[in-house]
Length: 215
Image 1 (cartoon, helix red, strand yellow):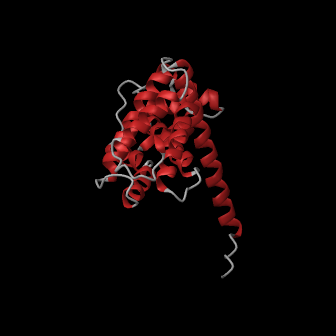
Image 2 (image 1 turned 90 degrees about the vertical axis):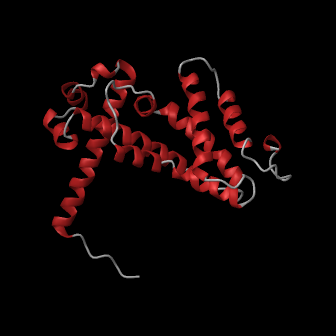
C-alpha cells in the first residue's frame, strides 16, 4: 500500500477551512432546529439564528443562500441524521432480526431531534416545500430499510414484492405511532412496536422458524 502524499501547507489550510465550515454549518442548523422546536417557525429569522450562533447574517446567506435554502438544509440534515442512526445499528446474521432492530433506532432518531423531525414530517415551517431533489435525497437516506427488506425477501421471510412497497408501509406505520407519541397520546414505545410488527407481519410468508411474534 502506498503512503499518501503529504498535504502541504495549502492542502492542510484547505482541509482546516473545510472542517471549520462544516462545524459552523452544523452549529447553525442545530441552532435553527432548536429554535424551531422550542419557539416555533416565527423565530427562524436570519438575524435571530445569527445572534444565537454567534456569527454574522452574511455567513448564513453565504452558506444557505436564503431562508428557504436554510429550511431545505434543515430538511436534508434531519434525514441524514436518521440515516446515520440506522447505519449505526450492528448488522445481524438473520435479516429479519436486523429489520426488527432498526425499529428502535428509527424511533430514537425521531424523539432525539424534535426540531428536525417536525420539519421533515409535520410541515413545521408554513409554506416550505422541499425540492424534488431534496425529496429524492431524503428517501435515499432510508435505503437501508429497502436493502434489509430485500434480504428478508431473499431469505423467504417476506412475500416476493418490491422492497420499497414494504418499506413504505412500515415507514407509514412508524410515523403514525410517532406522531401520536409526540403529541402526548401514547406514553411509551409499545404501540409503536405493535404497529410496526403488525405491518411487517402482514407481508410475512409464515416461515416456521420465524420469531413467534411474526408467525
